[in-house]
Length: 321
Image 1 (cartoon, helix red, strand yellow):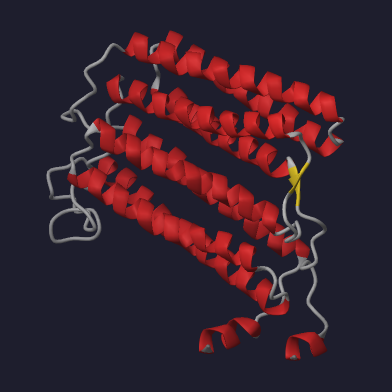
Image 2: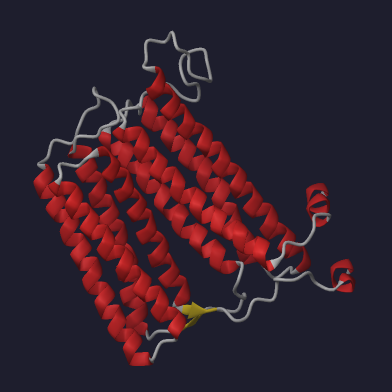
């Protein structure tokens, strides 16, 4: 393939470059979720009321459109950031591809890398449908939730750059693996419940947007209750780590999850007590992204795929063969 030959001419990415690309993928996927919340709390969700154009007849904001210029540029800026995320995703693919050229066994790494641009394109389409649906609360919820697996996959990609390709060897017993699956599932339930609180709350993205007709207090209690369940599962998982004498690296990841999850719960409670101020909404979304990253990191740290063999270029004679 001509493009493969072109990629093969690129310098082999060092261990530092591979790590930097993985971190950039995680940050880019998480950041787009946070900036989306900024669009919502500033009432800029329909600053660009159509898609893929911003306003009818123009891809960029027009000051004579009858829409506040600041709202236009906030929403348009979020759309531009999607382009940056796609660039980062493309760099991840090229980096993984270049690694695989020297190390053909790294197929899993390339597959994970391809989820980045594929997911961003899908997310952009979902975002466009959200705009065309005039920010109906459930479309906004789907738009946010579509971001969360991309953040998770980006963490897996970061890990894949620095692990081998052997079959996964669990570092926790079968009961611990089951609890970890439940922990991840409940995490997404917490996130989904959070979108219902948002759907019924004061920050709709546009003053004319329909809201979820349900008591915010009840929805917030469900959201908080699921977080408590998440923490209980996390505590039980810790008992499993004690049982097997887990390595220090796994304990560090476990500790980070506790710190992030408890901080996120405290922030959510404070946010609710203060009447959901705009700035705290975006910080809470940032905290949600941190919980996803920490939980995914715990997930990847709970198994071992053997030593990484692709941090340096393969000997020339092997690549030539």
